[in-house]
Structure formats: structure tokens, C-alpha cells
Amino acid sequence: MLTIVPLLCATPAVSQAAKTDLNYSHPKADGIEREEVQFVQIGFEDTVDLVSVKIVHPDATETEIYNAATAFFKKRSEMFAFTLSESLTAPGRYRVSYTVAAIGAASTAAPKSGSFSFTLDLPAPKSAH
Image (cartoon, rainbow, N blue to C red; front, top):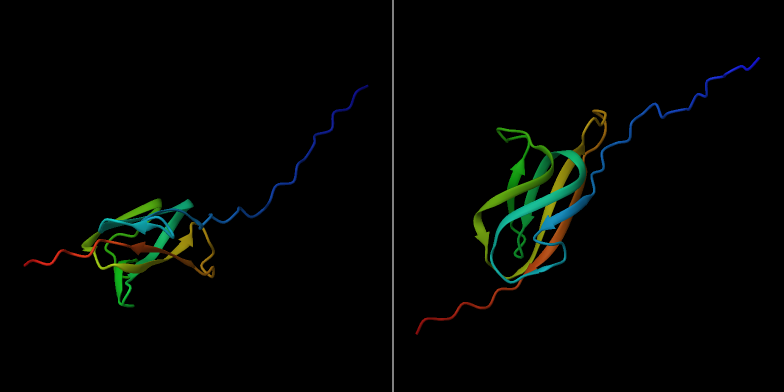
């Protein structure tokens, strides 16, 4: 007589947290832009809740692009794009800082912050004579 015994496989009881690593940006991280920057785009490995995004200008002033605490609509996606109210035209090094939260993370899980920088290298404006 042949006896068939079911084979049981163990599966993890806890699902993996969403991957919150940045995998795309415009302007390109550590890149050099030769035209004014009119929008910022950031993409992640998995769907995340966007908490905040800001730009730190070469003169250390900051421009908030998005803040979930004050936003009318919450943002949840893998890719986010923001048209800037004023294009970036001042030459220098800019930093885009962001904070995201993994989907399904426990309420005690801390959001993850990150940033990337790029350089804006525009030709000097021609003086009018």
C-alpha cells in the first residue's frame, strides 16, 4: 500500500515591507542640467506614501513642493511628478529632499528620508547694451 504524505512548506508570517529606495529622478541624481528646471520627478522601487518633498537651493533657501500634512490629496504611487511654480534658473547645486512611508508599514514604522543633488549650469545671461 502506498501512503501519500502532504509536503508542507513554511511561508513567512510577515510580508516584506515596500521597497522605499529611490530608483529614478529628474533631474538626474548627481547630474548637470544645462536648461532651466521646470519640474521634478521621483520614482521608487515599490508603491509608497509620499510624506514630503522640498528643494534646497544653492543659497540654502528651501521650497516645499509637497507636504502630506497640508495637502488636499494624499499621494500614493511609485512615481511622482511636480511642476514647479517657478522654474529653477539660478546656477549652482540643488538638493531634492523627500520623505516616504512604506505601504502597510506598522504605525510605529518611521518614514524613510532621502535626497539627491544636481547642478544647474546655465550660461550667464547676456547683458543688454
